[in-house]
Length: 173
Image (cartoon, rainbow, N blue to C red; front, top):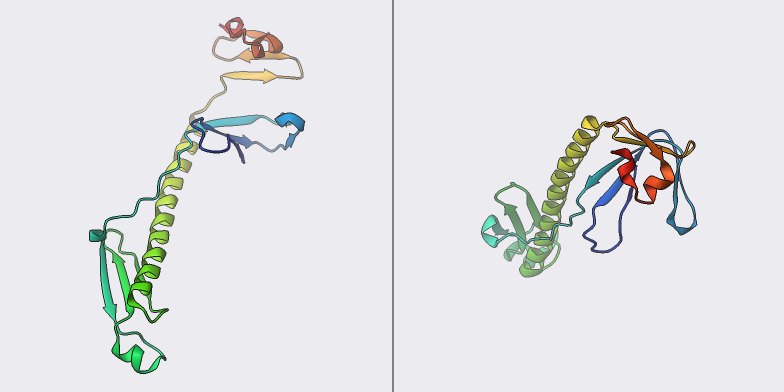
């Protein structure tokens, strides 16, 4: 499956092409030659902004580090454990000698994990919606390039392909 969409922050919808047992060849000028039937599913191309949750959604604990490190590691509480209360995800960091640096590292790791969970949920919703669209989809029109005709399956009418592509869609009504 490949997706064709405008680059950048375009408000235009993304067009996903699901190739059914065929291949796609791209020619110069962006022309796509399809050798098999194609299903087209339209879905909005949204990019959700990364929001940092408020600090009240986190619980931060400090403790002494474990492992080798001598007197400093045994006396100073530089190990940081941050727990996201809503999801239960937690991250621990004792990489450096600084509590503030360890807290920043742990928070960065935890925010990345929260974003991954959020993106996985969004992808699951999108995939479910796409699968429902494909199951409920029936052919409305068939564009037959070999015979240069278009068939509208709702009305049963046939028209010349070139005329329809030039904008004379009323031939199918």
